[in-house]
Amino acid sequence: MILPGDPAPLFLQKANTDWGRYSFDMAAGRYSLLIFMPSAHSAPLAFGTEVFRNLEAKRRNGILEIFCIAGDSRGGTNSCSDLPTADSIIVFDKDHAVHRLYKVASDQTLWVLVDPMLRIKQVLSDSPDVAKHLNQWLDHAPRFQNGPIPALMLDDVLEPQFCQALISYYQSQPQNFSGILTRNSEGAAIQTVSQSFKRRHDCVLRDEALVRGLQARIIRRVVPEIRKSFQCTITGMDRMIVGCYDAAELGGFGPHRDNTVKGAFHRLFAISLNLNKDFKGGELVFPEFSDQGFCPPAGGALIFSSALMHAVRPVTEGKRYACLPFAFNEDSLAYARSQEDITEDKISERK
Image (tube, rainbow, N blue to C red; front, side):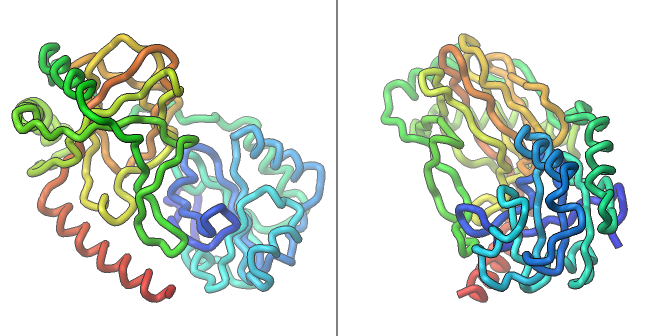
């Protein structure tokens, strides 16, 4: 059985979301309440009570997300309307894959509270008082851990003249609205654009002298620090772009991870290099760990694991220019190839 302190098992399952599925790794950054039930028609004892409505209020305030894990999805996604918590995420676990991950019997009702780092905090049997207990616990729980961030901040990676050369190149070239690498309803990787989630314009670096100069500085000044801090040897990098977050459109990027879909599995570290300082906002934040924002100085870099959930707060004044490469090595490339084969097999099974 799962116990407090265990990492919450991650899953991708059918749900009442816009794209028909939900990937639980995206639940980080707030508390999650997973309510396992035999079916969408078998409401737990606390549903509909005033104390449960208090939990729903915490959801609306961004403190908590509620997931109903329904073991029997008869009636399809329309069956979620039968639940008192219609605004919550309903996971249709017809094959009981999520139940098995959490070691919950198909006929069992169980409440599981998960913290913002996706670690198990409470495992509770169904009872009329379970919602009251959870409300009291959440009322005294910290919203964020506000602990240290497993990231590396460096200054003096790029000289001011080189930063200006990169900005000038961006301004002289066509720019595209930056896309998002995500999954479609079948689980396949697709490129899409969502201005409500990501507002950034990108320019691919095609000037060979600038590319070589950027690579040389990262190899000389960043790669040794990654080896020292993370005991990882980097052998390659990709996505040589200059991006711009513009206050005119509140440029920013919602919470995401950088290595969760085909085409990105090989990414080990994100390297966020700021090119200027005349802007406000635009800080990087890591909601699994803290609500503190981080912003490297001009010419500096913030380096972090591609597996960490992170977001870019809206730029409220000026423009933030940044180079945003990813770093990898031969082992991560081999891992990516193996994961892409598994992903293709799973997609074929669904068709």
